[in-house]
Length: 124
Image (cartoon, rainbow, N blue to C red; front, top):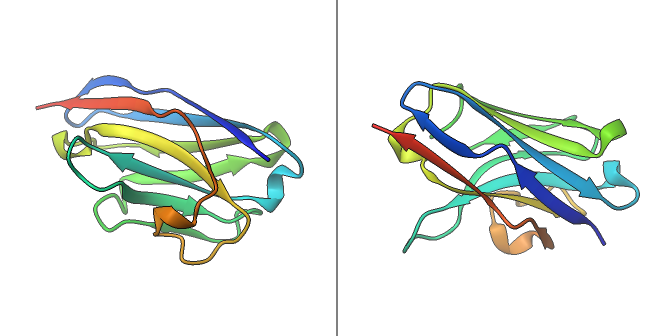
């Protein structure tokens, strides 16, 4: 079992930056693939980015590639999402998630553990 807690969301203007954090508990932390998803009212939860257990592989949705960077610090049991050049369409609740395997990573149904979410609002 792993417990996840997101932080770092907030209100920013278009073009600004935010850094989201996901603190995790559970052993061994490096065995979990981690991902960020986001969701807005009335829409399906959307894949944002994923990172494999030892950070050998990462993946991004085309809408954020080149603007967002996912990383992790296994010694501190923490994952990060650096978000730059934010746009109003990035506004959503962002969720941290975890699973045992780094495969079919864009499908939210494959993830076993979820945080409570953190709100990101980008003003136009």
